[in-house]
Length: 240
Image (cartoon, rainbow, N blue to C red; front, side):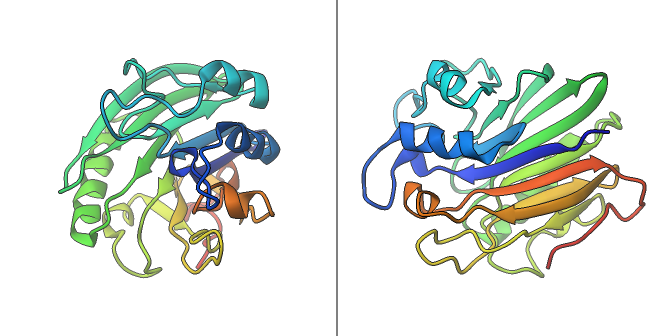
């Protein structure tokens, strides 16, 4: 199977470290990632109807990707989570999931197909408190355990500073990969942005995109991964 190239990036509502809101800069970085699927966090503004900070037409024109339709008014995603996919993917089903916690949080789940090969992608932005993150991951895990055996990847800002604690609800069904330090973009100290693969997916390669542009476009750096069907029961390589 041709690997899926995926990425996750918290774009901080397109406001860079220079305090400028620059959607075109964000789209330029996304175009340079060269991936098939991108999960974005903080893609919508927080107030009112939560309009998108990125124009769908500009996304298509600048990146060649299209936003998965969440049927959520002027928002690009759900609770700020958005998914962009390459033209070769068919969107079969989309679910918007509310996650518990003090802050409003959610996950966006999309069942995709490319050339008859299915994959499920979950885009998440977990809460700031570990107890809330654990509850949120328990709800997400239950939602993913719906009997559909398609390969599944979870992409997002996990907001977990520890490499050994806090993500326990995923451990039974997923391997959690931390490709590298992605926060803070100006001086990366923590691997907050992660990729979690089920046992039917193998992570072939992964990394953090650190360039002069990504170091200023947001407070997070983008993280990417190459995934393929797994022939191993442990889900492939683990990053520590």
